[in-house]
Amino acid sequence: MAWKSLDDMDLSGKTVLTRVDINVPVSGGKVTDATRIERIAPTVADILAKGGKPVLLAHFGRPKGQVVPEMSLEVLVPALAEVFGVPVKFASDCIGGPAKEAVSALGAGEVLLLENTRFHAGEEKNDAAFSAALAALGEVYCNDAFSAAHRAHASTEGLAKLLPSCAGRCMQAELEALEGALGTPVRPVVAVVGGAKVSTKLDLLGNLVSKVDYLVIGGGMANTFLVAQGTEIGKSLAEADMAGTAREIMDKAAAAGCKILLPADVVVAREFKAGAANETVPATECPADAMILDAGPQAVAAIKEALDGAKTLIWNGPLGAFEIEPFDAATNATADYAAALSAEGKLTSVAGGGDTVAALNKSGAAEKFTYISTAGGAFLEWMEGKELPGVAALG
Ligand code: 3PG
Ligand code: MG
Image (cartoon, rainbow, N blue to C red; front, side, top):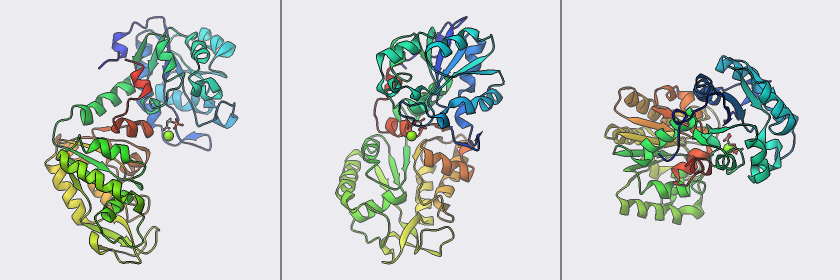
């Protein structure tokens, strides 16, 4: 690994500018999912233990270079203090007078949160003067925001060039888990890729077929592959114009020795709604007036068989319309099975992406997975084989 960790840094008496991703869901002034805050807690604790002063840099929403009061990070102070178990101070700007004063006033054992970096246009422009204004506040840069590492912004990329830099504990865990799942995995490797559209996951599928042994395709994307095979899919969601691309992916997989698993049977319904009347049919027999909303039990059995022989699983995207019951059945059954194999130590399982994590949390399987990424877009780009600017800058 080209980057340094907190273990490699002397932090005693130093102000550590720590980029975190606390872009968490908030409703009625309360954090509804504190996962991202919990994941950065070890970083804060370790900086404090090493005698450093953690000063948190973060974005919240997409204010696009303007001060948008509804996107102030101040609302998160109580949640941070509760999870970290130490006092958390707040500064009304992330650069200039208010930030400098708050940094100098920070006491031992305290954490400082600076206001939303995206209130300044220089953040997303990765502006040199804005990076310098951030750098002026501290002595060390720690990037713990893997889930924002696909953005080449001042606080995720520019700053790494101005100060001695290291990865925080969450960043480190993310990189180690992903490296273990796709960089140098123990084989055989199964990838599960679901979601609505092939067009948004082309780069992903193209990269995976040359890296994994089994590629399970689910969700609306699978329909496009069925169309590519000449299967009639009734009213199912599909991208007919992507059929040629799907065939190219299948050819590339065959050449690379990657086995693509498409559902042999499917659950179909006439309405897209929870509890809609449904039936299970072979994938080749979707009625003309019905739509495919989930993979069927035979499809799940085939995935389980692949998992039985596998050592590593990487998962992005649900297998069906998991947000409406009972069309979450294939996703849940597969997730539970992978979770059980992981708990028995037979499988290393890594999952990421907003919908994916929501689906695995819903089924309760997430806890038993080896690693659940905090990242959405960054996880996808990493799986696509792309270099993440925030990670590259640490090297
Ligand atoms: C996220 O929530 O996915 C990250 O914080 C990145 O946010 P962004 O997509 O607004 O850059
Ligand atoms: Mg996003």
